[in-house]
Image (cartoon, rainbow, N blue to C red; front, side, top):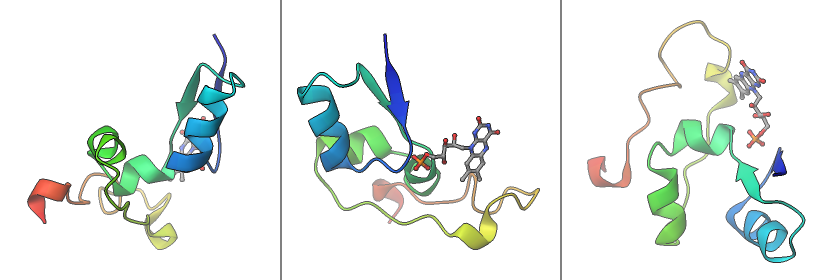
Length: 72
Ligand SMILES: Cc1cc2nc3c(=O)[nH]c(=O)nc-3n(C[C@H](O)[C@H](O)[C@H](O)COP(=O)(O)O)c2cc1C
């Protein structure tokens, strides 16, 4: 089982799986900004960008407060 991660988009992740370069793709920042990331990817809905200003801040802001599509 090989899991790759780091800078993947829906398109590059799909290509890596289709071309058998990876078994799974890990998402970091995309998951912060899109708590419903699997649903958004499946539906090919647009992804929100994470705000780097809130990374490593020590609080909940930017970690657990991004809306899902259904919150919008
Ligand atoms: C705010 C933030 C916190 C992170 N914390 C950790 C961590 O605790 N341990 C870890 O191994 N990687 C951590 N990472 C790195 C991510 O797991 C991931 O490798 C990195 O974000 C690259 O993947 P991405 O391009 O999908 O975001 C963190 C990244 C971010 C942005």
